[in-house]
Length: 234
Image (tube, rainbow, N blue to C red; front, top):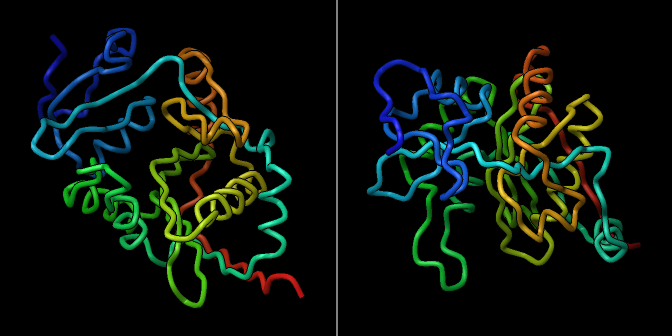
């Protein structure tokens, strides 16, 4: 049995997380900004389907991307140089979350419920949650969102309505985060998609050691004033 959280923002020790399913730590509680911030500071994140109790996770190993290890494949680098698009940060947070929540292919449902959107929108208003947007002809065609505490960034989800839109956005986001001194991007669980960008797995102990150091630094609260426009190949 996993612990059931009460009104206090106290989580069990991470060593109590289950091995199967990997990282399940606790259930219950709420998605208030204070509880979410407390969770992220301890390497814990919520993930649950609508109709389920709130479930809290801290998997090991942990998929992360060190910003200076970002790998951009030659074909994507060419697209980034030659495609016409515009990148913004923190201008369409709810729209990005809605894009991430939209069904994909044969996927019937989504874990990004209205409850999750409201919770992270509150954190966006407080300056902790951020969106990264890709526009083509003034249409939002891709993006991603996540959380920043200190110099630690926690990626949550991304979406694309045009080919390569989320990849382009991701590259701009990582490069900007690196320039601001962010030391680590949490990718949560292994995916081949993120591995192609240079993300890799580390132990929970190493993850927590780095997280503790990075979250102790001063917050870079939003909105983040980033704008970039590519006119494409001449």
